[in-house]
Length: 125
Image (cartoon, rainbow, N blue to C red):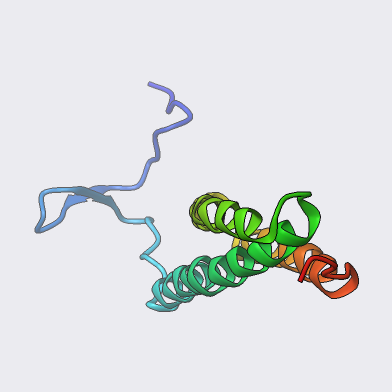
């Protein structure tokens, strides 16, 4: 009987947990892989919390300068919208394919909002 694509000729043994292990099967990678995963999750968490906080605050300042409303009303509206910005940043960070894209998705809007705050004059203050 010819072996199909998913079958091997290696002998199979039962493990203590009841699973089947072939003699030629590779062992799992060392704990280095677990450490990388933990560092990636910590990096994304830092991007979500610190980056989200920074972006939400810069969004408030930039929105206040761009929107043609009274300062008090624009500040209140920007503050309410900043909660949505923070939530979207948190979702984006953990939905990104890797940590580099997560950080880029946070830092590029931070740079844009920072540039608006830095270069646009606050004429209504």
